[in-house]
Image 1: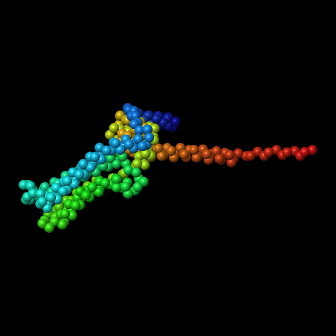
Image 2: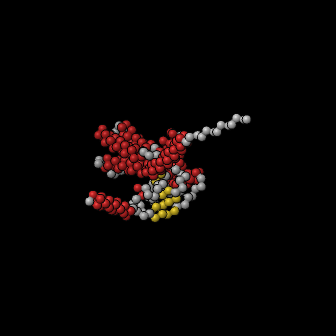
Image 3: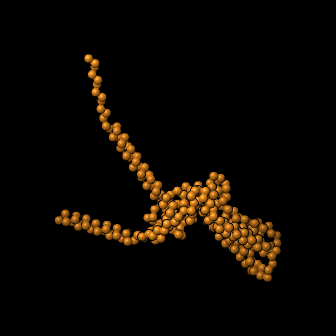
Length: 289
């Protein structure tokens, strides 16, 4: 009776395991692969491609930053009443006008800074010079300061404006400065050295819309993706995927460490065998007669 119960329990467990495996297999996406060729043959050529890819974003960022400064100048002229249009002569038109200019200033700063950060990830600066690396990655923050601080200074030093208007203007500009500065800061910058470090992997996978490439096509981040692009890591970088997936990186490091441990264990076993094997004594030579 006990044997029958054990057999029934084993069969039930087996069926449950098979059902779970079948469910997992059914839910797994079957990928389709598109091979992508590599343009560059050396690191210098790869950096030339990344620089070319980043150029449109840099141009867009600069144009938007120039517009941001223009809106700031317009806000200053309206606030100090150097520029008087029919709708800016009296309140509420006067207040609304310079606030709108500050808002447009902020929009240009945010979009421009995000374009600049995108360009920095496509064509990163070298980390050899720490100051230039920081400056390159945080130029958006500097532009945010230039886009609002002069307005704040001029508002505070304007003798013709009343105290209430000054307080409102400073509060609006400071809030815009904080928003612009926080969104312009690059919290996860990439260096040229980091970019090139992962540029020699033979086979990687990435998606058309992603920003990273993967060392494994069964990475959990690719579970819901059918169409995958595949090629070398250099070709992925050329297509704007400048980082190795953190999950894949951790998995590769774990597998490498496991392999090293296995080799070390085998070496220890070999050493133990050598030390445990008794050394046969050489036969004594017979004395000459």
